[in-house]
Length: 152
Image (cartoon, rainbow, N blue to C red; front, side, top):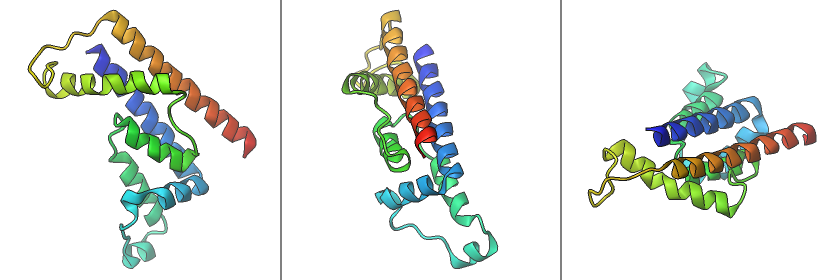
């Protein structure tokens, strides 16, 4: 249960930070959209643009709200586009986080059992390891936001 809550907290953080960045900074929004291959073929109707001055902004906001923020690889690409940097402070942190993604999946979607039906066990040491990696990610991102605020 705690492991899932750790993921819920980081998902909310990653979502809030990315959405705020993109909605508050037109350059970040533009960079995100231009670099996003998934959105390349998307269209906004001329009628919508004519009737809503914020149609493009609203479209981007909707797409960002629809993302699964526990998909760290995908979210990393969004941050790279909008912020110009990875969400991972180092390979070690990335490895730990990626190790726990399938555990989260099993806890949420398989009642805590792995693909073979074996019960997952999560120790206090596992939670500490995950918590430390999540904290490293947040510290890293906050440092990027601080630098960004003072540099640009």
